[in-house]
Image (cartoon, rainbow, N blue to C red; front, side, top):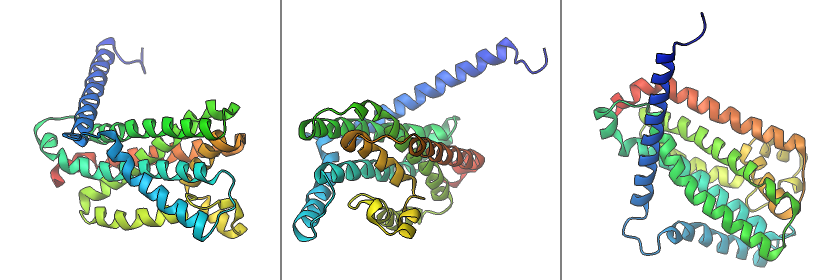
Length: 265
């Protein structure tokens, strides 16, 4: 029948899919082990930077410029921990391409496998951080019904971050200075994302601009479901849509340049 793949072709695609999943798993495990190799404290080291940021900003916005945001410690921790994942995921994508360049030249496999593997490694820390945040929320506030929806914004954060990782990895293949440029831009993103401030207290024109940043919506959902017990279906659907759009755009951009990427390293 026309339009139907023969059984042999389907089996071949399934074998390829299983092979690529295996490669992603093995690369992710290797990256995770390498990240904490010879580290006595292991995962705790990955928490030191966001914890230091939390201590500094908590002091500034409670002692020097007191914030009126309800449950500010949880509010701040939710923003910093999830921003740390976005930062780590995007930088890891660029570094992983360079670090795996020898594999790209020796073995044929989709180069997107490298980005997926590095993102999974970062996602392991994100999941642990999410559990830490959830435990803090339970300790300080007690359980709230919408906590069961927390996986939704976490998935949105992963999709958005991986989409940006694909875009940045593509740019890095052509422009090695992209790593330094992104180091500056990611600081700008920190201050235009509602990490230390509440976007809803800003003037309307400014808050509308800030809401164009998908991280604003993702961080908002995480706080809605862990702190404020607030649900808005339209807000959730728009966040999911934006995250999927960025992921799809990033993946398609990377795939379009995939054949040249190995040659550029």
